[in-house]
Length: 292
Image (cartoon, rainbow, N blue to C red; front, side):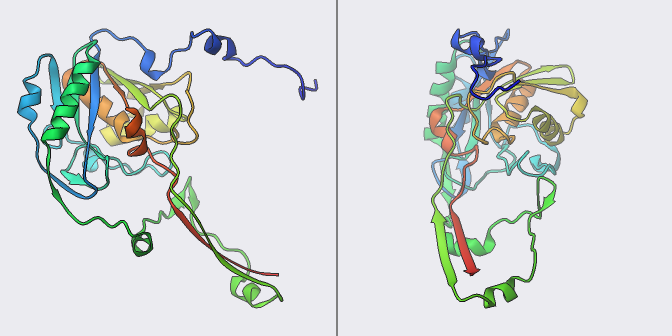
């Protein structure tokens, strides 16, 4: 059958146009708690103090999770999974601040009070005092210390074919140019969202992800539990562009908060937070040499 040029129904088309799709943040849960992230207002340094007692005393606040109260994770919350399944995450294991808008706390409240959780997060953010350190924001100076993984998706990061030096010495035409591109951010219509629920030793995650198997493996390793005890569900993704191919901090934090409170926890990133903790295409500097 020749399908080119023929009208074809999308499998999920009817559900989407009739508003019957449930995305990760749409799944209902009894005794649901809302979580809101608190992010840094400095670029580099450490958290010196924050007024958690005031927020914890607010009506219906279940938990203020900080680097002092968050559950301790194996290996300091670091995973041995390779990119792009997992990156360097912020899981409230230290007081360090590594970049602007990095998460530094989570505020949790009981069901149907997302506004209260948001209010608590704003008040907590305003109370934070930092010890700021000079950030390294000079691109040329930072290149020498840039992180370089040995592998990407199981393959060596550096490859070479032929004699490059000899090839550059040949040919009458020479091109030696530098091309740069600025930072670019994903920001799909559906923001990153996770709903976490524990049933004894078993963790269920409704997560906005482009890779349920990779998410299952990475979360299990970071929490120090067996993969068979983790179930990741994502029947629909409201846009991803690659940013939902990795496991980010909020996924693990939702699971941690659910574990510490004994309640299902829903954590949805606010639109400005989509520019900080869920990756981007970094500024690039490419030097191209050719001979023709």
